[in-house]
Length: 396
Image (cartoon, rainbow, N blue to C red):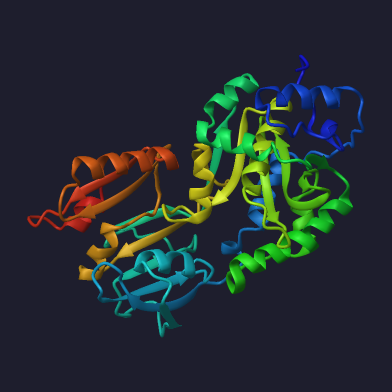
């Protein structure tokens, strides 16, 4: 590799090495770029501009508080559970499905924010989350968490940090003919990606729950970014937006073509993002934001690369899950709780169970915590002598 890292823009139009010799991939790709291939200048947004973008896109600051009552059956206890939401409506599906343990629930307008019979109150608006009298124990959950991998000083060291099974999978996929990956900085490429890949992919994957930014908002957020494309036999089968800021390469919007069924395309795109990050001298590869829950599909997918958890953006708005009853449904929820909380720099999940886990279960819990990037998945027993919910949730 060259002595000095390459700028991200210097990789524009340069074919990245796409063969199974992973150890040589960084050197071959960097030499290809250094040989004088086309480079397209790319504007770099300052950190302050990115923070301002975060603020302007924080819907919690734009929406007035609303009240919605969700009713369903809690999975463990099999009893009816009522969850009152105060704040934004966009977090209802995420929180309700994990509190109840099921996506089968009904929602109805709440007559008022007070005096509503419920087991749980979820507050996700920055101006409503303060409980100065600590009347109810609560889980304090970030809206989103980021997942980041630290790269090694060399490509060999970075590869060594990738789980062996994943390295073997990528190498086996790259033995197939016709695979090509490159970065495109043409504005038209981002427009085509948004219209033909990203929007159809979102709507197919999330249906009515899909949150699709406008084309104008998407292009504004992607300003100065490159489009990492993956092609097989000339067909575009997947792409993701990448942008470098300070010492980090950020993966932005990603999408796969709905017209191809090739497996492991996401893994290949992520692998090439590692490759680009190494060539550009980045310290971190940022996989973007995920929902903070152990059953979140996006978070679990990214966990295969063994990332660490990190805060998302500068806004500290959190979801407050207040437990206002001591029903069987509450104890059922706490036994399988998977919401990720942040204490200082650590991320933990807390569960309250009737019986202490055995050795095998404890080992599985520890393995899950390590894989996801938690400091701990803490499990404690119910204590009939005290209020277990308050004593447990009031203390990390």
